[in-house]
Amino acid sequence: MTTAQGLAAIGTIGVLGAGQMGAGIAQVAALAGYQVRLADVSLEHATKGKGGIAKLLTRAVDKGKMSADEREAALERIHPVIGADGLASCDLVVEAATENFELKKRLFADLDRACREGCILATNTSSISITALAAVTKRPELVVGMHFMNPVPVMKLVEIIRGLATTDATYETTIALAQRLGKTTITSKDSPGFIVNRILIPLINEACFALQEGLGSAVDIDTGIKLGLNHPMGPLELADLIGLDTCLAIAEVLHREIGDDKYRAANILRVHVAAGWLGRKTGRGFYDYRK
Ligand code: NAD
Figure 1 (tube, rainbow, N blue to C red):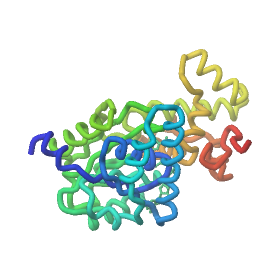
Figure 2 (tube, protein in one colour):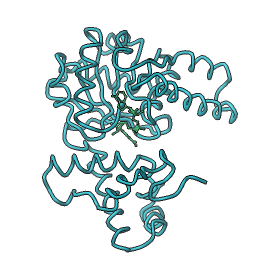
Figure 3 (cartoon, rainbow, N blue to C red):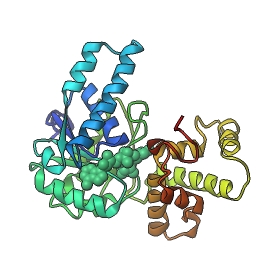
């Protein structure tokens, strides 16, 4: 099958996990004209994900970036459903549930059972081995990493990761799909954190060490990196955007899998996660968003 045929065979995209990343992926897929099935643990969770998309699209209409008709048409293409079983009719699924290896292994086994033969199973994991997730399925050749950046509608990059068994056809179709969604791709080896998080998470973790050692306030650290290194966001505010639970989960994968203590997570990160201060999504992280 050629890449064009592979891409043409994709009409319905499934997204498993309707949190900030899953909703963003559903949004860009629907805007690109795909039918989207958006799944989470319950219909309430999936519908809440769609509700967040509706709000963002309303804002885009208010700003004159899209017509009300385009908003309606995109929303009509997004169908909230429950779990992997709700994705049976999809041609490609992007798994975007919580960053946890045991959970993702379970979800890949469920997707493999539920999805039709030939359906590509992609994962938006930030750090977990694509090969290991592929190994729990009977279709490792159709499993691939498709790592979108946050916020998905804004960020241009998608990192593509091949597992050991991923075929050229799966890899090339996934790249073509990312491009069809308006994204630029890079390819990373299947290594903990791939390219982007292998470099980003140590930066965020070092900012956490700087904060816990009292080098400066959160604002001083973030301002230092923004104005001193010309980054659009400081590492602590970026960690709050990503989710501190996700940052900690990635740091733990880097530490465990690479085995170098330089990747050990800062205690202040663990303490914030233990407190449930996960960043913007819970209203409080290194900064307070409750106002
Ligand atoms: P999130 O906490 O916003 O959302 C996770 C979603 O997964 C929730 O809606 C939750 O209900 C759902 N979920 C949990 N268990 C589930 C199950 N058994 N079945 C179906 N859904 C389930 O997290 P997020 O930030 O959207 O991250 C999702 C994935 O994307 C993770 O793998 C993360 O590493 C990756 N990612 C995150 C970012 C980021 O900046 N946050 C960037 C790139 C990739």
